[in-house]
Length: 333
Ligand code: TYM
Image (cartoon, rainbow, N blue to C red; front, side, top):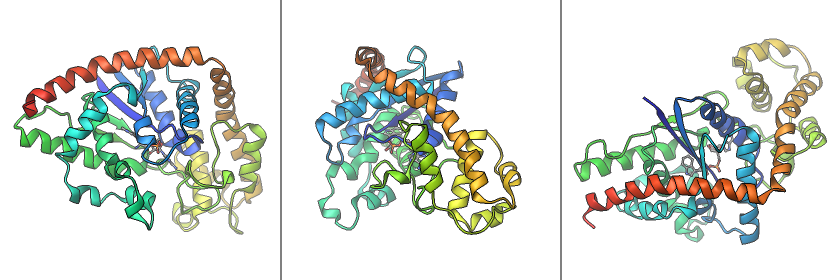
C-alpha cells in the first residue's frame, strides 16, 4: 500500500539546520521513494498565531518553498502548497475544535513554552494551534507524518482527535490514524550556544543556529564559536550524555555522515574540539552551502515559485474539498 505523507513547516524565517536534519531532509528521502504520495505544506495560518509583519510573511513563504525545492523536493512528484489557500484547513480546524477537549490542549507543552509566563496575553490561535495541525493531517488521509521530536505531542493529540471523531459519529476508519516518523537520535538539534535548549528560529542570537541561507564563512564562524567544554571528546555514549554541547555537535556530525552515533564517537574519542570542529564545519558546509546557493537562486524566480504553489494548491484543494464534503455529511450540515 502507498504511504501518504504529510508535513508542514511554518514560514517564520530563519529555517535552520534543526529543521533540515529533523524534518526537511527526511521529506526529501520520502519524496524520492516512488511508493509514497507526499504533501508538504507551508503553514502560513500557523505562522500568524504569533504576530507577523505581512511583508516578511510573504517573503518567508517564498523562502520556505525555495528551501523545499533547493533541498531536493521535486514539485512534480510531491504537492507543495500554502495552507491559507486551501480553505478546508480552517473549516476542518473549527469542526475538530468542537471534538478536541480543553483538558487535552491544556497538556500541550509547546503552548506553555511559547506563551511564557503571561498566558492571558497569548492568542487563542496559539492555544488551538494543534487542532489546526490535526486538520492539516487528517484532511489528506495521511498515514505518516515526518517531524522533529518537538511535534510528537501534537501528533498524539491529532490521533486522539481522529479517534474521538470516528467514535462519536460511529464512522470507523473515516479519519486515518497517522503514524509519526521521527528519526530518534537526530530529531532534536540543540542551540549552538546552549546544549539544553532547542535550536530555534526565534532565538535572538543568530550564533545559536546555522541558517539554511548562511554562506560558507558564516557556517565556519558559527561552528568555531559554538559552546563546548574543556575536556577532550569522550569515548562512550554514557560519557557523551553528560556533556550536552559535545553531544549536540557529535549528533549533527553523525547525522550528516549518516553514521551510527557510536561510530562518530570512535572517530574523535580523546581528540580536542578544534580538530573535531574543523571536520564538522567541512561536513556542514558541504551539505548546506549548495542548498543555500540554490535558495538564493530560486528566490530570484518568483514566477517559478508562484507556479509551484498554484499547482500545488489546485491538487491539494481537490483532495481536501472532497474530504470536507464527507465531513459535512457526517456532522449533519
Ligand atoms: P516548525 O515550522 O516549527 O518546524 C518544522 C519542522 O522542523 C522540526 N524542527 C526540529 N527538528 C529537530 N531539531 C530542531 N531543533 C527542530 N526545530 C524544528 C519540527 O519538528 C518540524 O517537523 N507545527 C509544525 C508545523 C505543522 C505541521 C503540520 C507538521 C503544521 N501542520 C502538520 C506536521 C504535520 C511546526 O511548527 O513546525
